[in-house]
Length: 346
Image 1 (cartoon, rainbow, N blue to C red):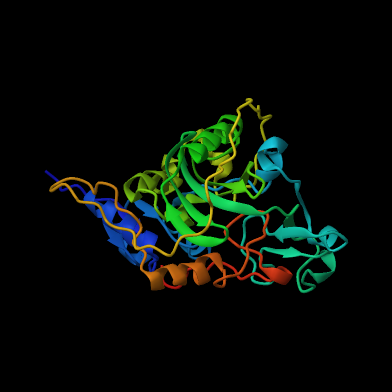
Image 2 (cartoon, one colour):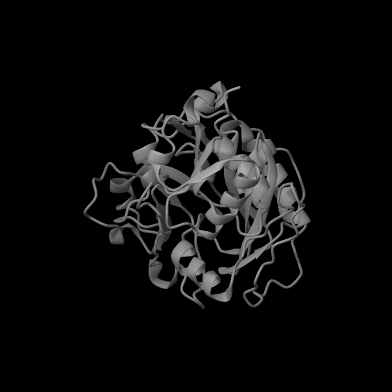
């Protein structure tokens, strides 16, 4: 009998803490874990890594990479957004004379980092005016949460920030309830495997932050084994992509958006204290011999937490986060640094 060739999870170096946890979870399932595309040729391949490296390997390895449409956030019902969001061009954004948050909808542009701007005059002049951008009203998030969604259900998740400071913790009942409300209203317009960020506003209300590709999202305190389920669907063999997901393939262009419904749902403001605790070292729970890890939490030393703050969130210690959405905080004066893209050697 011919030996079964195991599938491959391709993780380019250097690996993030999330990539290490996913590698461990994949190995428990019998996957081979590789750093270079040459080690995955001719095999069933799944991907976790930056979009630039993904663009280099997706074609040769026949990868199907799922991501939300550029205009997805603009089609979220306003009661779930709590701010205005529109997709426009950089040329039009330069004419704005009010305080706004501006970012590229999906592609990361070094000349256009996501940031709050006092008006459009400060936007970079070195880019084509036809460049698409998302323009949003500015809101302040007291706490932010990440949901890993599979077939319209949040199968894993984590709080990742409190008042702009990295603070991973399990989801609470309020965030789970709001996440369900958002997915009931919007899941039809999202890929079947996606990362959804939501947040508690400083006024006690809840709002959608953004949706992102799962294959480059940090898990924080979410259970890696469940996160892996979402990653494998979001970045796997092109031939295995379901028909309903094909409009969400990276590079396919946005499909016409559905008309979404909004179900009434009440959420009580969280009145407990939201002061940020000291950085914690998350633990790894026991492993059942011969089985899968039983809830491996993100391992964060104090130094690693600082690295993630600076390298992933782009946030200097002590800086206030006032921003519209996403991974990239806007600090005083509208300056912002982008998340690192680990894109060197696929």
